[in-house]
Amino acid sequence: MTDPSPSGVAEPAAGGRTSPRPPACGPLTGLRVLDLATLFAGPLAATLLGDYGAEVVKVEHPHRPDPSRGHGPAKDGIGLWWKLLGRNKKTMTLDLSHPGGRDVLLRLAAGADVVIENFRPGTLERWGLGWEELSAVNPRLVLARVTGFGQFGPYARRPGFGTLAEAMSGFAAMTGEPDGPPTLPPFGLADAVAALGTSYAVMAALHARTASGRGQVIDMALIEPMLTVLGPQPLWYDQLGHVQPRTGNRSANVAPRNTYRTADGSWVAVSTSAESVAERVMRLVGRPEVIDEPWFATGAGRAEHADELDAPVADWIARHDRTEVMAAFEKAEAAVAPIYDIREVMTDPQYQALGSITEVPDDELGTVRMQNVLFRLSETPGAIRWAGRPHGADTDEVLASLGLTGPEIDGLRAAGAL
Image 1 (cartoon, helix red, strand yellow):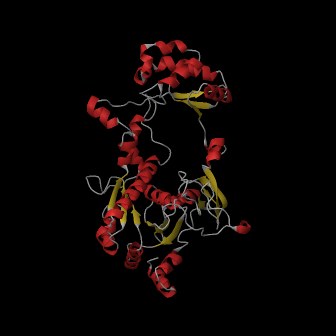
Image 2: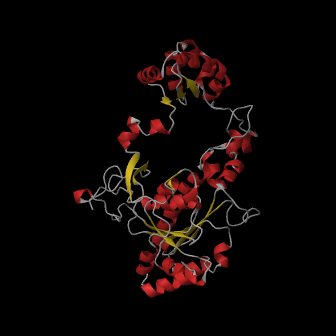
Image 3: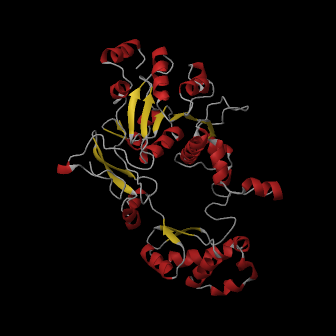
């Protein structure tokens, strides 16, 4: 197998054939992760670790696989979301509530660095797999616990999903048109933000372990990372009693900032967070006189005059097709972007230059295209070694690596532990 390509996908071996098990590469090579989680934050955190070389074993119930396998569109009965979420993971089945499954999990944990789980608080403890038992077999283990509301507090035992975090964090209340209802995102925003936070927390805990020699527990609540990405909302309220209203596509902090329709029926987005950019936009659309207004010098002042700024921008853009708008804004060094759907994302030259969407060989679907690894490292790049594998595809291999014999594996399967 060759070294990974700059695009982050393992290159085919000599002769054009792809190895079903390309070697791990990246800065996390040698790190062992057990992914016990489902839907979506915990599994995505494990995916991010696997993308950069960690050996990830996805543990699923024998009869109730990760529901992400059935979420969204499927091709030939094969869930496509799982191909992304399950990439770079070996898959095995294990009933953690079964005594045999518990024993196997403890054996796996003894040789692991990280366990990621998202059961309701108390579930692992009920199975005899809580922190006390896990740390007893491996004091260096890092246990990441991802839940809706955290491990303690009045809501801890409630079922929690990303939608609830988007609602409770204040995100939905701020999103939407001023006279419209609170608006939720049509994708797993809170889960993705929590996944990024969890992978960061894992790395922080592993770094601490290099000094202490001990692992620790990570308590990640979905409702908290969303608060972070919303910026200074708590501070504004604390100091000023300010509650940010819904402003649609406008900003409460700067103007012009909106989406605008072009002459050919396309849409673009304009941002003017910097005063210099706002000046360039207003000169471009033929309204340079507003630049001299006292209120133009601050973002808050421009936001208070959004109608006055938006109207000439919208009018100018409406008289030009998107290609003309993009060229004029680029020439003026003003910030603009086309509003894409996924079809245009797949063909955009900047995404192509970065390798943001890449082709991955897959035993079930042939070649699939998906997002590449999240960032580029110059010395230790990660790679997508394979897309999500079938349910339990690697169970026997993982158990054999623990030293279990064929008859022992057959016995566990007959007993219902696998």
